[in-house]
Figure 1 (cartoon, one colour):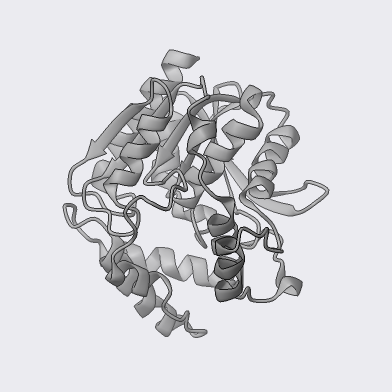
Figure 2 (cartoon, helix red, strand yellow; figure 1 turned 180 degrees about the vertical axis):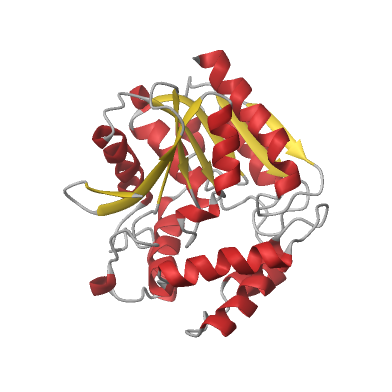
Length: 294
């Protein structure tokens, strides 16, 4: 793994495959470290002719934390937005999108294929809006446009996502299993041993629950990207599961409908995770898009 100082933040990242192949930047979701992009998934993409790059978003994993900003006041944020005010927040999705572009700069990549999951999908959409010349293709996985009229998370999924993060390993593992079982894919096998291993790695790399709250504020404050998405001319793939309780399928359908010419891949039984048995279908779809674009 490597580290880059963008001048604003330090980002931890690593790569898979041949640097001469098609560059593919992977952006992970809320509070999730880059290792949530499983090595096997990254290697499968590399085998299809990609130079795969994954990284820890700001306020997550081994990248810069914004601890001095403290824990945001969600009620004040919502009240400010409802009043039509611009709330003061530590950073926005625009800043997180610019982090991704700064990483491409560091790697001397004038452009890349970009793929994001959940909040990561929101970030790559924002990269496409702010820096379209840097984007060869866009893949948005179980994400949304930011339109608040779209269906919201189920109460059970939201309760799991916002449940307290225990400071001890065993407590953290149990919470991770609870969250994974609640928002995961009912149509695919659940591998408890694999989930425990991934959660242990996340715990050992470093947790930052307050950072997750700050990322959540960045999502809430960003607003509806639909008008901007309608003007995109970037080849786009939207992947979503039929059983996602956190960001329901209509959110993915709305994303595909907003972006002209976007392809929608709906995976039966997939929730808000990347089940191993769905990798071949996802890798094939992503690789097909990037190969067509070049």
